Image (cartoon, rainbow over all chains, first blue to last red; front, side, top):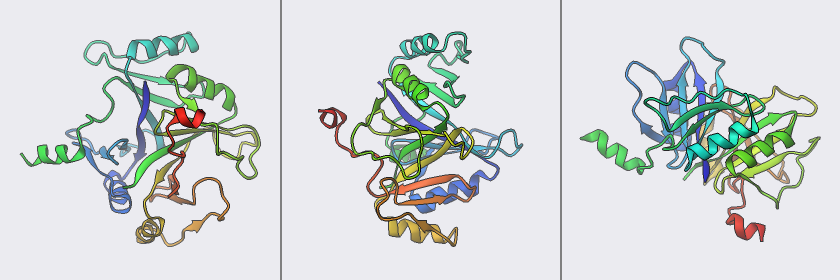
Length: 132
Length: 132
């Protein structure tokens, strides 16, 4: 089973944009910002909204990619390889076997993940963990 | 609770792109309850993983660039959401009552388009019974 669980937006002011989604829609932090970065991870409890730092203007601001969680990484990768033979897929094997980056036939970026982009703990648990 | 439930992609080849998501990820077409959008040419596809809708919109007249286009949030209270939005932006334009899709189209503070809907983007029937 494959599920869409992640939407990523690039922004050159991640804090301001995250505040917008928190204040208007009540989305909550889903994970810590990586050290030295400004990317902010929010969630509605099921789908993650990642607000990616674009402070160096590496990309256009705006919708950047989305993420699909799959139960069976190998089967999904095999299917995609058959559908798109010869199209490259970035699959870091060594330390992250459950992750892959690919593009659909129109070139939209997809982050494929076995474990998903949230840890599927209720958001409150993350908050509790943060207090400790 | 407000929920991310919808992502729309524009493409010149909706059939091919829909086939990719169906074949690669097992997404299914939401078959009922989707009259054509006003003024839309070409067939668009509305797929789902069972919870989240992936809309693949025909970009036949090339109204905008191909690619990730907007996402959708199902809101509990559209008036309350609109009130909160007005603290960030002055003008909100409601769609006509008879629109078959989201009731309100807004932008976040970076200009990313968001569809807001109380009805939601799927009919929320389990897919199996919807299909039956």
